[in-house]
Length: 417
Image (cartoon, rainbow, N blue to C red; front, side, top):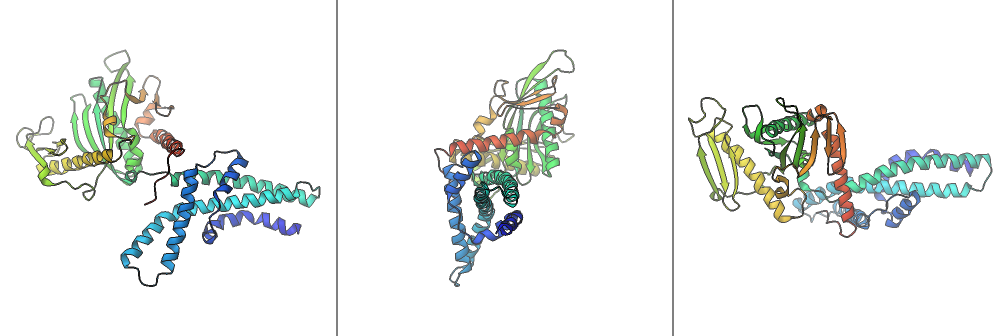
């Protein structure tokens, strides 16, 4: 029997990696198994809401499999399509859960094997126990990774995270220095977009004679742009010595991040719009103040306004203004639907005052500190080059997930559809 058990341990690792393909036909493990494993490893106990959701997802996935495999022809093509879409959406979650459950079963079997050999002094039994303990350690490491993945998949997710984003950057306290820093922030986001493969476009900008930026609206088009950039919302404070001074000055820039809205998501009645055209002002060439190319659009039901004057063509300015307006109206709808969202635009804009900061850029110390998660990175040149932003955003993502986990102590997860 010993050689059979030895073979069982040696082949266990391979079987575990195949488990996510085989385990689909097995029943979902009891949530109690998860809690027992967590207690053995002295890790956090999975929130009851997630355990319940795991069970519900497994049951629903099995129902969908049964319905699709036993279709007697009574289902319409539309229903089959909807069932298939729902099953595809559930697949990564169910696969992760069942893979994790298979790993937990494997650990339980190893624990039983180790217990059986704990009192034996036989050399073969000792070797078998050592092999089982080593395999158990490797499985527990994989379980820890899978737990994090399952939590990430099960937590409530903002559907807007996959969207493109629109950023609004405004210089606040600090005069010319604030405008110069706003231009630096704009360039940083442009470099981040380039590194991520997102399309970057300036929709509207008001510049200063010194090369600063009073206000800018830009778009970052690419899947997941909003989910990563939404954490930039807030007031960014900069501490640095101006070129013509020897003292450290403090300035502030406010950033608003909105999910870009599609036309099908926000239906705006043309009757609800007031469109004003006027002559552009500022830098721009011979067309400035000679043609009415600038466009200002007002959404009458909400009073939301968007104005663009950067392009020579009135038609192009109108298209950009509508894009900005649609995003702002969409954000208003989202805020009305969920007033507790942390990315509410009213809380994002602020006054630009240096006391309402989310992040500080300290040039003398080459330090960037995010005050929401107490994360500090060094190398301000690399930060403004877009190289270090992910380090801060990753910490903010984890913090957001932790906050959602805390909420699950008293709240239940929403349904998957």
